[in-house]
Amino acid sequence: MLDEPLLIRADGSPEIGTGHVMRCLAIAQAWQAEGGSVYFLGEITGALESRLRDEGITLHALESTPGEKNDALEAARKAQTLGASWVVVDGYHFDGSYQHRLREEGVRVLFLDDYGHADYYEADLVLNQNIDAEEALYSNRSEDTDLLFGPRYAVLRKEFWPWRESRRTPQPEANRVLVTLGGADPDNCTELAVGAVGRLDREDLRCTVVIGGSNPNESSIAAAAERTDVSVDLRSNVNDMASLMAEHDIAVSAGGSTCWELAFMGIPNVILVLADNQRGIADRLDEEGTAVNLGWHESVGEEEIAHQVAQLIREDDQRHRMARKAQKLVDGWGTNRVVSRMRDRLFLRPVRETDCETLWHWANDPKVRERAYNSEPIPWEEHLKWFREKLEGDATIYIAEKSGRPVGQIRFDFEDSAGMVDVSVDSEERGCGYGTELIRRGTQRFLQDTGADNAVAYVKVSNHPSRRAFEKAGYNLEKKEEFEGEESFVLRRYLNS
Image 1: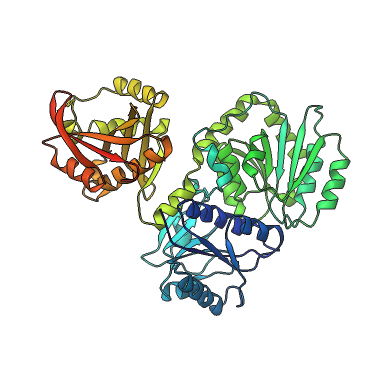
Image 2: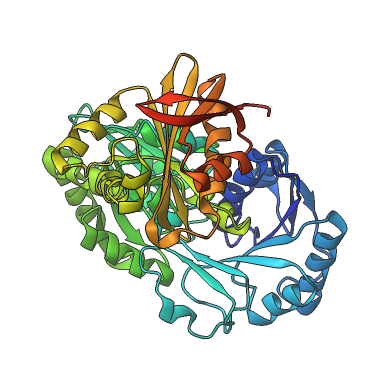
């Protein structure tokens, strides 16, 4: 478990809204889940302040002017006092000199970004979770700055985590519309969307409207809802967006971070672009077939919004197709990928159907076949049948990723309260120590996740590298016996060993 503080320096000012802070909250929650503590430095008030305190995050007021030299020095000093080696930075105040000063003071920096707004990038890691992220945005950067790009790194808060392995299934028919247009919504597009939904002539239609904590237009939105014949439920200060989204079929949203939450939940959305940095996101999601981009909000009227929502309600096949494509974009493990990169370790995720071919290639690697108990090549059809049986049976399989690419797998076949281990590493990644790390961390996670008593490995006596890897990963040599017709070592590890 992690026992290290994390410091967050994010822009939580009311005029900006909640977006920057909520992204950082997702990372904070993943850090806390591994045993670390989290501290927040900056301006924050009201419901957002209460939310962070409820999450067990300690708040510190900023004494310096936001974004200036003393801000960076204050953040660095706070990190040093706390013993935090990482500072997470998110906000438009923070430029290249801010990053430079933090690193100059000896702290590591994760910089969350939308569209390459800084003049220069010197953070250790730059995260842009948007689908339109590209290296050209960060051409002016330090040579040791690493980039994390795209929805595979979409940071989702912990209320979404329970939906990762049991993905939400869209309803056969649609009659529930969610309107969510950001924390501030200064142009009051929420009221426009409410008026549009009110144009739909459906008695069974239900609409939920989320009013952001920094939205000053709640009274006019409520008045607009009263004028419609549609059932409209107004919500504010929603702490569990995942459960709320799960109750809906379609959304009207802005083109910001909410798009990744909706995509993960399999909810097609009609997008109004509220800021310049949302244009690329909205365009690409429309091209990918997961959303409908209506463009710049000032050029969109109620009639156009109503038409697109009505079409998605009516076209069940189109809506289901969009939902499937969206869920492929965002698998929900982005936050954990980010924390794994911060900690410079492998990231483990559950196997999914799209890993089938990769596992087949790994299984047929000559070295793997040579060390296996059955050394014959595995035909594709046989592998496909085996894979489907494993997905439906008692097997637990984790895929290991490094820098966003799969590098190995570990499988546990559950038998008699124990998990029998099978592990392999991509041939191009051998010699990097991944095997031992994969065995150690994969076993720990399996024993914690499943409640199994122990994990056991059978290794041919001639396979010295595999035996060493298991022993370095905490397995104890128990005995020598015949297994599958071969003299083998039996190695075992218990949860707390």
